[in-house]
Length: 332
Ligand code: ADP
Ligand code: MG
Image (cartoon, rainbow, N blue to C red; front, side, top):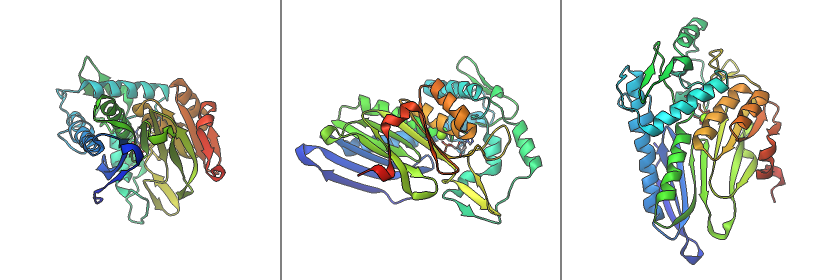
């Protein structure tokens, strides 16, 4: 558990800046808010929202959450409307990506269990799944077995849901609603939850938000920045955050449900820009699996902008992404 870090700055004109760092959804949550009002109170509400959403709804490790109950065969589990709508969007994305994106990969991701190796690790003891185990787990996956009835959700054939690819994006959408509804004088902010970031409102001086995109070959540096005004969601999926190396081979946490192995589409990271947190998060995972050509098409279908860093370190941007992007070495 990271120590809670909390600080308060005073800028000119009584606009305050509050920074808060904590943990949520198995990752680091950074909250930066600007405004003349109760920024620290609102930052606390954001933290509570993330924690509640995780424990009550989406955690697949907590058997009392809605997803935990569904995974454990409780077909009567009541699914809140917003969660239900997200599941509908995910199933559509599975169809549109021809199964490259699939939240029913729970059995497979549980078998690989790479999420517990956060930060990368070289480990000869890592229990590499056998081909037989992978085949067996794949039999218990498949979005066609996720049945979305009239407000009830049925998991057929032993599938298990894993919302790791979308939980953070879903949280950003709810944080945006909270910021829009609050009347406590918060005028702008940037909230990041792992690789998913929400920009909202303005800071003093109406300057755009600058979001750095990590260089997969040197994670202490950036390939460039996105310059964004107002409300946007940016999500990055990469092979450099959670992985294990065995005999020089990197096994990362984004799986190709069609092969059962970590995706191998020639890209190292994918960044998606969208007005929707759910879509930016889901699409970054989906397009990582699909690779550049099919990923570009999928992003376009969802009106999202996209940036790939390929294995050679080359960048591939959708036309609509270009106006927001500035190369790192071209910044003054
Ligand atoms: P991160 O969680 O690091 O931000 P992603 O958003 O790309 O990265 O989500 C990766 C997580 O999504 C994995 O840890 C796993 O829980 C789940 N997952 C892995 N492969 C897929 C896939 N093909 N489709 C949907 N979810 C996936
Ligand atoms: Mg994602």
